[in-house]
Image 1 (cartoon, one colour):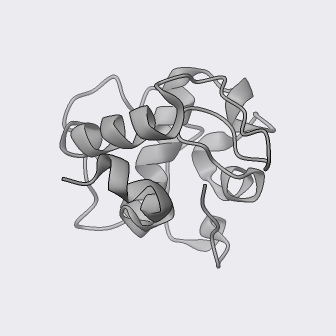
Image 2 (cartoon, helix red, strand yellow):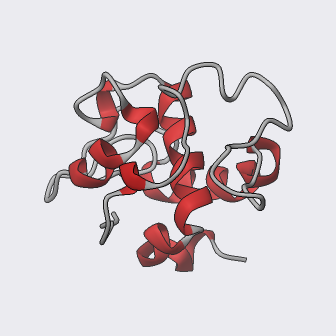
Length: 122
């Protein structure tokens, strides 16, 4: 589960609706010169996804608003460009959740998932 202390929609660029981002290997976000591509971030995000939800994209945390494979809090989910059109992570298809995770990863690294780092960090 994670909280964002700033509105991520205010950054310069992001994922346009989360559509088709993950279909092209090596395609990165325009949010910065050091933005990770899906192929670069995939091993880390896969480990996070497994620890957060056992890879279950419709997961719902029973004690918070966190949902989806990466356990996005609703406030974080709604601040991401890739989440457009979906009120909660668990309602979005896998490709949109993956795009949102990559967007957040490019913005904040692994810090949003620090609480579960004992599970996924090497």
